[in-house]
Length: 255
Image (cartoon, rainbow, N blue to C red; front, side, top):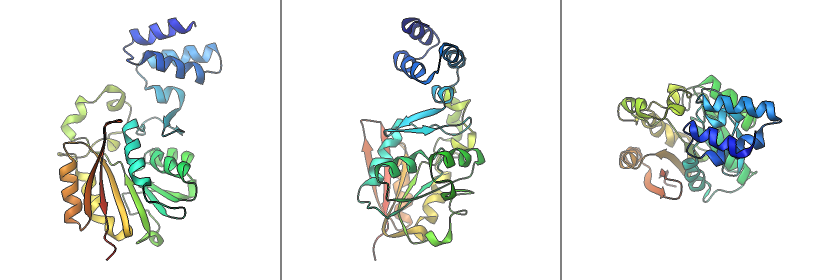
């Protein structure tokens, strides 16, 4: 199919970034027949990342899977904030990991890190094991599946927990609402239910001077910071306007 026709078909289907998507599809397809199949899936509303089987994130290619939360570019703000001050050999945990994109991006930037990940969703765990060392990805609720030997050793706990208020899920774009498991989106009535569990358990796992970093929204950031302060962490809000990302970082004091 000619490139201009491909772009026109995508645009007619409502794809805002039709030129970019056409390029991705063209590069991903092995031949014309596969390109036609991929285009048909995309026109029907399947997210581009699921059509091609990967997402580009922080300079790496991350494997994705049906139902698993697709990494958003705004989460690159979380990766950048978490990398600051780390050194090879430090322990990093990607909690509520989804595809494991956060941990994979940090490991790619600093191969000497000791990266672990966990998620409640079995599909997410299976996907994350394609992007991270499989023996360091665990299935279970928050901290429960992590090896006990990590307690008090974690230098950076990176978390993109679901933070969409329950009533707002219906307002999300259909690519997320219809193609990602609800457990990856639903943060409860105010969007902070999972964050509360994350913050409550963080001090037991963080090393002295270690940081908990949570992606959240601009509106929710003050509440996320208040949760961290109440848990004995020194909280700071980090805003990255370039990618529309908001991160709250909580530092465990050294004493």
